[in-house]
Image (cartoon, rainbow, N blue to C red; front, side, top):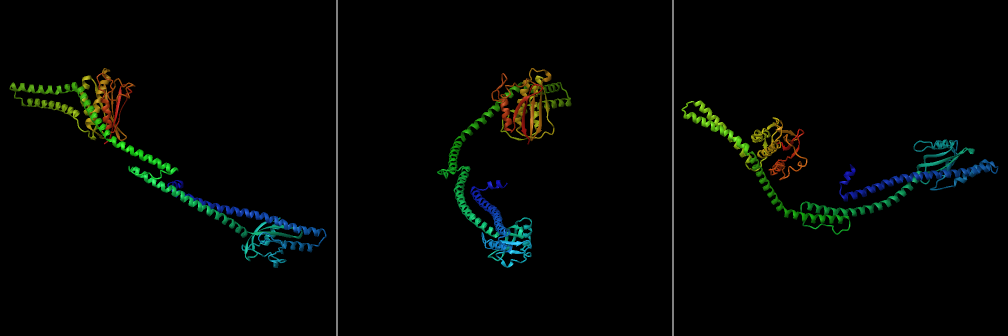
Length: 519
């Protein structure tokens, strides 16, 4: 998360932030190094005081050896040892001191007034009786002990670390130590020197980071402004930083190439716009002609069936009128019978008028209008238009559409033309088949925000080589076909935002599917 937020910052901010992080890291490293140096120095001092304590122990042992050899007595041997150690100093005036196992001071160069006295009650600021603690440590073989004691030349107590070594023949223990504030002072000196050097390095790093940030941030800002102008299609300006010989210059030259290319492309686009509009207009005009041709072809195919459909109501009108005329000529006064005949004649005339109106709607050319339509009514109209041909050829049709089918967004005439063309293809595909297989099924189902319409026949089906070609313009498998029907049907469906495709009928034949959007 922090890394993602950091990467969202500007390059200049990131560089300066990296410098600050490096500076803080250097400070943290200095603190860790100081602690490590202090521990190491203390370890070194402990080793040193241990060695010095061994040296003092050797001085005492040498005098004890002279005593045992009979060269001097015990008092002289002790006095020689004490005086030899009294004047010995090392480091920052550090000294040796001796106490006996009864907690009496034997040698204390910085506080000679304590020598020969009981110092068991001496305690540091924490209340620890450090002489007794040293005595107990000596009785256990010796070692290192930490406590507070007055520092020479200062007069105040400071934390001290001493090494104690027992000398059993005289019941003494000898020790020397270091004051830890001396170690801390040396550590501070090293740390200050290191931090001074680090501060110089940090300052140089900061200045270099600022210089690099400015050399990158400002040019990138100008290039970003140039890109913004390009997105607004403003090409009449010079790209900055193109003369640089680093990565910024490479980016600037790439943007300049993009500007030139985009400017030429825009000019080419503008030059070809009229050509595209002209081509689109020609395509629309061609599509309109194809649609009109398809209508005329469909009308020609419907001619025989329509003549038969019109012949029945017109013949009935003639029969009713002729019968009424003969009855009037015979002097009949059956007013009710004549009225019934005239009403039947009027009904048959209205039937013929509806057939003609249906033909006019089918052939009428108007601009497409996508409006909410009841698909069941369009299915019924398409079935009615094909009914005459179906009866003449001995075919049947089944409409399978639920009553609650939602309205679709469609042009009624265009979708009616699609359905009629698919029905005509199905009728022709079943020509010559057994009577029980001469059946068409129109179905509609709503799913996923659209309605899928299917027209199923039980004819000869679609060959494998024809499946991808039947929707191509001017391709037909009919001896007298034009090859425009299915292509126009697909164009109409795609104009409605749907798609048209074909599949095999598992029972033999073909299934044509198309989709329409729900209104």
